[in-house]
Amino acid sequence: MTAESTGPVICSRAGCREDATARVEWRNPKIHDESRRKIWLACDEHREFLRDYLATRDFPVTVIYGVAS
Image (cartoon, rainbow, N blue to C red; front, side, top):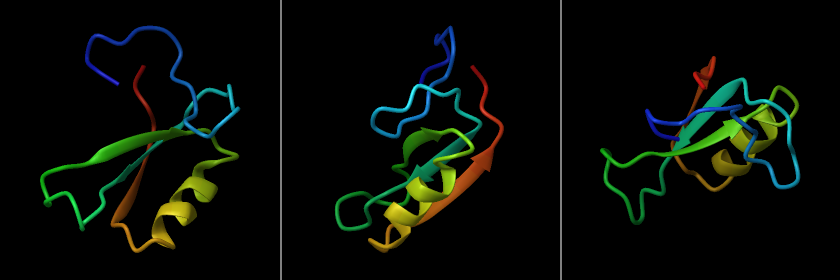
């Protein structure tokens, strides 16, 4: 996702084509320092699934509601 992105923002869950409503920001502390964040986009249905998937791996994770296209 970049500042130049246009069009719909789609959920990152495999096979999902719904509009994203939240950003799930995370990092793998074993390979990334605190400044590095990865972003997955999530629809309402998959937001908690994606957050839980990362949290069970002990990755620091933050959910930010509201996604700008």
